[in-house]
Amino acid sequence: MFYIVFILWLALDQWSKSYVMNHFILGESLSVIPNVFHLTFIINRGAAFGMLANQRWFFLLVAIVLVAVCIYYWKRLSKGPLALRVGAALLTSGAVGNGIDRYVLHGVVDFFDFRVWPIFNVADIGICIGVILVLYYLITTHTEE
Image 1 (spheres, rainbow, N blue to C red):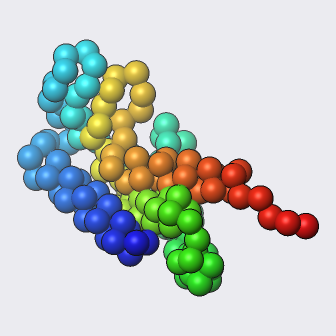
Image 2 (image 1 turned 60 degrees about the horizontal axis):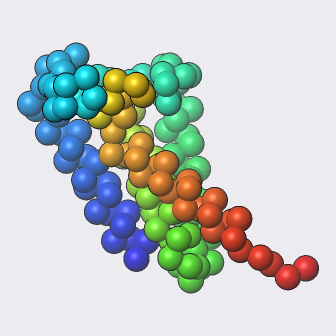
């Protein structure tokens, strides 16, 4: 399950970014729902909300560490509940997807623009949902002491 979700989400992320880069000019915005939802092509050189701009190697290191943690805990992770497996796959896939952008483009391709929130991408959605699912697992798991 982990590998299927990881590969599918990473493929969707990279395909969507490739589509935007090949069909939009940097800075171009297409209104899908006027004043609500636009597709706007930007290159984000920071993290969420543009924080830590131009810290490319830091973010690449975070992605590598996240993959290493998944490998280290693989036996436990692969036998864990669905929320943990899917959450870890989405989180890792998002980090790798954005890591690919950071390595190749020195920034991340973002394009979902709701006008009241910073512009984001498919990898960011995976990271957010992944964190929520992993936190859900951690909060609802009761270990006997």
